[in-house]
Figure 1 (cartoon, rainbow, N blue to C red):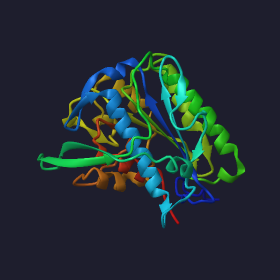
Figure 2 (cartoon, helix red, strand yellow; figure 1 turned 90 degrees about the vertical axis):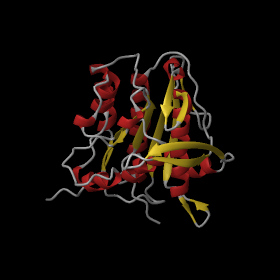
Figure 3 (cartoon, one colour; figure 1 turned 180 degrees about the horizontal axis):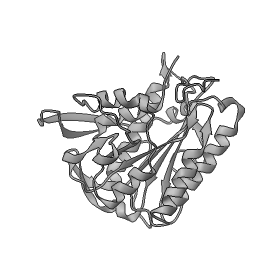
Figure 4 (spheres, rainbow, N blue to C red; figure 1 turned 60 degrees about the vertical axis):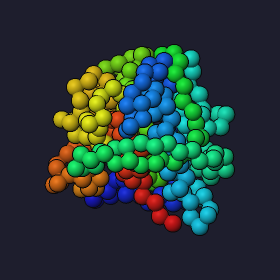
Length: 288
């Protein structure tokens, strides 16, 4: 019997998917970096990334002015003191319509990015600040991955989610884990990535905010394209590998002149806000 393809289940109200957005709130996030044309602490860049993703999930769940139950989401801030929910008051997944019900007012920032010709493009970026990051203490990334594993195991065990598009974990960090690195962090990530629905395993996406030069920013790199920076390499090693049938789509997203064989990693580093929507494009198939 031929095994059905994975990661093909459409996201519907009857079969929503889940998304955990994890935000590194450790002291190292006080470091100032260039994020597009914005020079700001990593914590500010992380907040912008997280809020962009939350808003995009709300928009994708909206049909005819109604926010439909396409997603269960959680936003977790992790530091050396605690892992805490940044949406709601409990460490649990909540329906996207509840997130939309507390929608904040729009804020706007200006930024620039380089197009494929190397020209500076000015843009205005509007976002809604659902969450605000901070910078204190250590970076318990292993603890965060273990918590995400427990939350998604419980979610996937529920009968109504058995055939859902598999959950996604988006970890926004500078990569400096302090409660285990190398093999320990890799093992924690593998346990998380082993959680599954019938449609496939959890996708672990790592968005790295670092001091790597902006000219090297890439979304969905191959292993060969990852910088030699130790934290970038570790984040690459623990990130999910995208199924090969996404190769054409990734080549289009990256505006590559010709399709390359991959494999591509579920990872991005130093991406500017306009690139973030591509992460969700890979992670869900919305239907009405």
